[in-house]
Length: 267
Image (cartoon, rainbow, N blue to C red; front, side):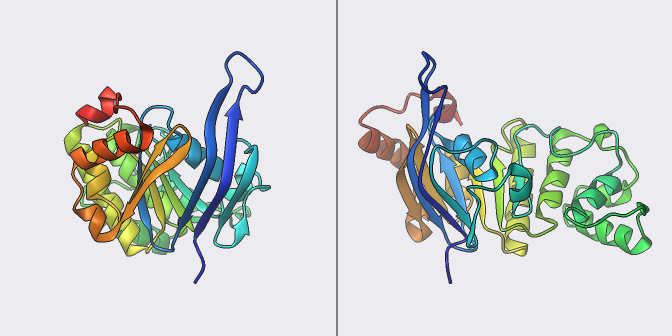
């Protein structure tokens, strides 16, 4: 069985040749097996979200290849890549249409990539399916299918976005600090839902986080980035035994400096 994701020597520099030139990715190499759930940590500007944006095709990379399940995404547009990917952003408002109901949002996600024709109505069968899926979240949303999404809390919206992102069983699920805007209790609930959705759908996933404890507690693999490169990659039993102090020591060892990111130190 081949890799689900192959990132081969990927480089990206922004504002090339200007005073604001910034090397964001400096030869990133990373392979993910099917079913891997990888957490990604690193200081500000380490290349974490930039890596996810490179996979999603937000802008072209300068050099290298990105392959998902044997498909070379490098020359595909962001729109064409979306067929293979699911993504949840930091802002709970991004993943859903606030003026539409829960069931309408879910119907859009369920029909993504299909020819819609002139018929839009949601059938009874579809509605029952959405109810069952929402019930799994344990948030009471299965009784609120007709509620406008804009009336929901950030945590509820993020949970629905997760459900929608996984509906078509994407080859790769990208979680870009998707709990950072939530309070600790709500964030913990959304992470629990994330684990459940990834496991039940047997998805391959990447989760960027600033919270070292979350990075250790979730997923089967952890990578640390620094200055646009992967500097540490750990998985399985070795990952389970990690402590935050271990990660801080690894960063100092690999980067030759102290971990100065206060936000991550406090997380």
